[in-house]
Structure formats: structure tokens, C-alpha cells
Image (cartoon, rainbow, N blue to C red; front, side):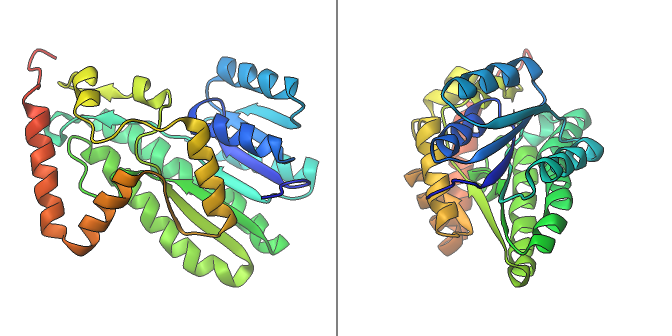
Length: 273
């Protein structure tokens, strides 16, 4: 995938999958516009990438703020003259049963995981329509495809991202704009550590997980392969593929797997939180 002369905006670009995408795309000649709410980490990542010869801009952006996202996109267009890729990658996670999920938790998840994607699409899509090309890549989750035990609120936002992406894919094709949705599965990124766990022990959760996390750079390579092929669903891990197929072709069995998972989590539930 030759990216020389192309321009990519990546939200959540300071770490995890976003940083891995930046590293991979920079090696392929892409000009990067990185955005993240964590200024310190963003500056560190930008310095590391520039040291390897990468060409990039880095801007502190809170994707919950539509004005900031619009300014990010308009600034990139004014400076660089085009936008080839927009990766809606910023996200937060919550591991909690719905009975333990507060309204504040719901608000944060919706504002970052859903509104953040809406803001990105709203800013980038009109530009791509006008220029007649571009690819919007929205990061959802395996939790956006299957029943997600102990991640109901998070799953709700990710299912919404999948639904938004489906409609956009259908509508955007006539304008030369491509759309993909990434449903990674477990990736070894900082989100595993920054996830908020309510009445659940994160170490136990990791031990009962159905697969080991894949490295971020491997995830980035698989994502870019899917983008290059213009795949709509970009599903990264074998376990996610298996669970997704089970849910599509045997939904009752898929719900049964979800019941088994929540039962396992409840064996280690902590009532003292």
C-alpha cells in the first residue's frame, strides 16, 4: 500500500492502535496529522516519529468538542490541500455490568466513542465528497458485533458506530468516498490499562479472556490491509471472527456464550467497590 503523497488524520494518535497506524503509515510515505487529548504523550509520540523521518503535524484535540474536530480537519485541508484518510480512532472503555454503570459513565462513553466519531464524520465527509475521494475508517470493537458480557454501555456505543458506518458506506460510495469499520478484538494497547473496571478485577478479567492480545503494530498492518482492499468490516483476531460468525448464524448460541462469560466474571465479582 503505497501512501506517498497521501494525508491521514488519526484521532487517538498518541498511543495504542493510533500510534501503530502512524508508525506504519509514516514508513509508507504518508503525511500524518495526529490528534489526541493527551498533550504530553502526543508530543512524545510526535518526536519519536519525526526522529525516524516522518512528516507530521500534532494537535491536542478533545473529540467530544465538535469545534475542535472541525478545526483539526479544516487546518489539515488548508495546509495540505487534501485528506485521503480519516481514522476515527479515539475511544474509552468501561468494564462493568449495566447494573453498576452510572449515568456519568454512560455520558463519557457516548461523548467519546459515539459523538467523537460523529464529529469526525461530520467534519471530514463533506471535504471528501467535494474532492471526490477519501476513506473514513471508524474504530468500533468486537463488542460492536456480539453480546459483550460486562461491557453493555461500551458495546452500545460500538454497535452504534457499526450502524453509522454501514449507512455511511452505502451513502458515500456514489461520491467516491470509502468507509470501513474496524472491530479489532484484543490488542495490547494502553486502553487495557486505562479501562475503568467496576466490581471486577482487571487481572482476573485478562486471565479469563478468550485470547491473548495481539501487538499494536500487527493490528495496524491488518487494518491497513483491510483499508487497501476496501473491506467494510475489518476484523483482526481469529476469536473475534469466530464469535462474530457464531452470532450471525446462530444467535441463540451466541447469547449462550455471553451467559457463560458473565457467569465466569461473576465468580470474581467484588462487592466492596
